[in-house]
Image (cartoon, rainbow over all chains, first blue to last red; front, top):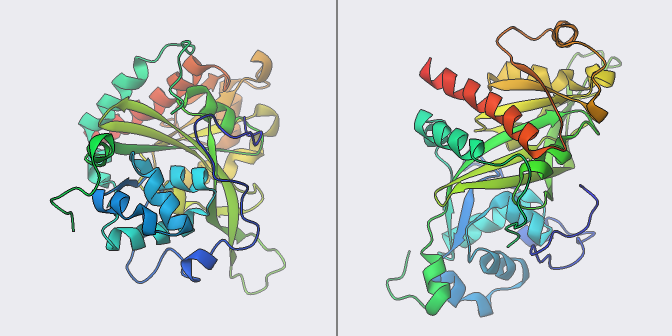
Length: 138
Length: 200
């Protein structure tokens, strides 16, 4: 499965950058004095202001806001834009502070709630043994 | 922060109003080549994605006279996939990366997970000790899933349980990482365990 071929619909922006993973964050790393790092499944969505300002955003910031037209997890963003997870964490926080993204850190009490677990269980149970012909690749 | 007048129109504006789903995270752990990514791929609605993440490796250095564990932050490739339960709920499956001869600090990836599945190849049982220890230490509900390569399992379940020294409370299942229904059932065992814990 991990054969390196790009997943359909993921639309990667090019080969992984070789040298500058944290250059785009001006050397900042993700966990700072602000406390806990955002979980990898944290959902990120572009705001109308962010999409409106797209033309004025540069490189990684632009790509992140553009990708977040639909809700994405930090992990999906990092994978699709070929950025280190911690780079995405830093940039997403910057863009949130600028009002261009909303960042939804999952509430642990909510994800561990019995009613939520039951919904996941019921949802999984309804999955057939093998795949149907259609796959949601976008 | 949110402007009342959207600066974009039409479909794009509607999409920005989309509320993201609640993400529920599960972790798939185990040694190299044991079937973690295959499992994720069997159940994920997207092809497994790979991203670079940081883990802290705690080297078990016998040469270290100070008995201070040497910790190094390493960038590793992490595979993951997801499954939309409904528009408000999404299951994420993360494979834990790392080198088996080291201790792990996967907290950066695992924090907040509802449960874990430790995949075992019975020909290389010791590859999964680190993962079993990690979940036990963290108190995260987990099950051990023996990947039946070519339908063959080298040891009985009792032998595996004895070898791994896992308590009776840890479910042990045999599954096939290539089969969607088989991966689904293994994940359900973990979720049922997590649910029982919230109710117990």
